[in-house]
Image 1 (cartoon, rainbow, N blue to C red):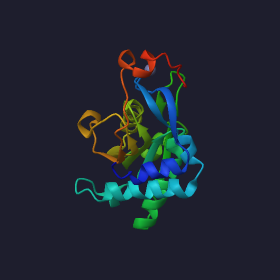
Image 2: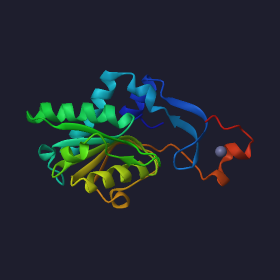
Image 3: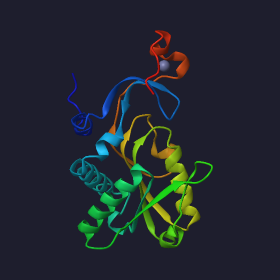
Length: 200
Ligand SMILES: [Zn+2]
């Protein structure tokens, strides 16, 4: 058997890899669900994941990580990731990297509120998120950032479980863990075919 990815080991340590019958945000079905909320209760692990995300982006020749002035993530998880990642970038480059977040509006779309538009205008932005499935919430964050006049440098995520690519997203994408966790369109789901009830 293949050696486990270190991020997978961290998720396991947090009890965040759940077994059952799940409908993902992408509407695909899977036997495995990554419960990021159980990772967020462990700040040392979250801090390490965010540090590695910053390093991961920094190792790329395509992105000048030292120029990043602002980190933005979609709430709720993105608030936490944005704080830790901005904190590590601030420490690495001895400067103040801002940590902002988007939140849902009445229609459920991720938008900037709280006067954050003014803070982001003209700044070089790193977008962070936890689990990438469809990339939809990242796209909403990106749109909010660009509408406010921010310049998106890159997108960094902890886990990419549906093979979203930089090309598909339209920005350089960095993933700590590209999973090979199986998922299926609902019609082809073997769990549905066996009549197994949906866990969530
Ligand atoms: Zn199913």
